[in-house]
Image (cartoon, rainbow, N blue to C red):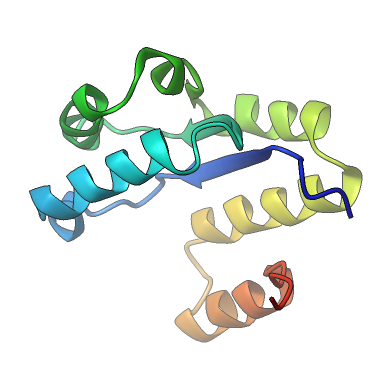
Length: 128
């Protein structure tokens, strides 16, 4: 594989509980990592179903990001995100992302079925 590629993140905010992200220092550290270490590798970060409560996280994170990194973020509805995935990702990856977003929205899915889905759709990282 070509090690010089760029990466797309799809962050599904459906069901986000903002109280899980109340550690300001952790948010700042994440922003600095995204802005400094990985900024050139990131092609796009698609935030799906970004609730009004989650906007606080964005406004906390944004000042720590360079303007170039800020422009890599896009905020999208579920259906628009699916279309972006179909347009920009290979078919297998797009199907995995779609299945993950759908299981997040399935009110009948159990914790066990979600965990099993995560196991089946995780793309393993290469060992160093």
